[in-house]
Amino acid sequence: MRVTVKAPARLHFGFIDLDGSLGRMFGSIGLAIDEPRLILEATPSNHLSVSGDETGRVEALARRFLRHYHLRQSAHISIKETIPAHIGLGSGTQLALSVAAALARLFTIEAGVRELATVMGRGARSGIGVSAFEGGGFIVDAGRRIRATGSPSDPGSLPPTIVRHAFPKDWTFVVAIPHVGRGLAGNAEGRAFRQITARPARGSARLSRILLIQMLPALVERNPAAFGRSLTRIQRIVGNWFRAVQGGTFATPQGAALSRVMARAGALGIGQSSWGPTVYGMAADREQANALDERIRKAVSGKTEATLFLARGYNRGAEVAS
Image (tube, rainbow, N blue to C red; front, side, top):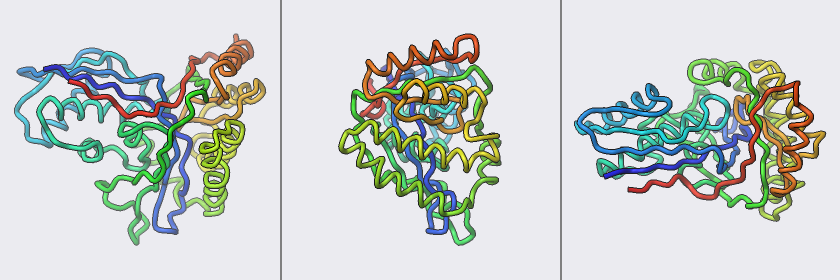
């Protein structure tokens, strides 16, 4: 038996509430995208082995799964394609869930995506990656309930998805990954969040209004210009929250420079995905995206080194086939 898992990357558009005074914290907005993607295959084996990229990381994830379900069987896992790690495209959650989903299918473990996410320790703050794996599309999650002490509730309680909407097929992003260091992850990410939580609620109020009155209606009415404006406005608010730990509205000077170029080149909306350094500019369709991509490349040539590619919304979850 051979199990194949294909999982999408995601863009993280930002958190909604770092104040927590209403009993929930974080909440997030994001989108599953069709490029890049993760593909892995798993087959039964007498001992655990991994081939391809991220071998150490994948082996640790597989051992975590096998240990949790008390399995004596093992597998060979082959990584065919990967999402680059720690650049803001959600590689960690997609890799963990892909390994878990493949092994669950291989060993007939009846477990849904959210159970697997809990087993693999994903969704500690944002539920966008889990929800992208689960069903794709444009996603808003409600964040975590918080205790009276002000800390997030039981880590086994994942942020619930409160909006999932198909993203228009024409709307296209020019995604740029500056050739710089990686974004925050793990313990460094945890320390950063401890510095920036309990932000004033007025920023959350503005962001929530933009989400409810501009972004979501623009999505339903298929108005790319209004949607793009809301992206940029949300980026400014979230970037200001994170300024103290990332050094500015954007995590890197290169990302900031690319975003300015995108805006001048005609992007409908701009932003940074998660901790970056990945930034994106939105276009109404593929033709406009190609023209935007060309203008950006010309503007940054010899100044800022970056990998650029086009991506569109992905309105399905991960595919698990055997």
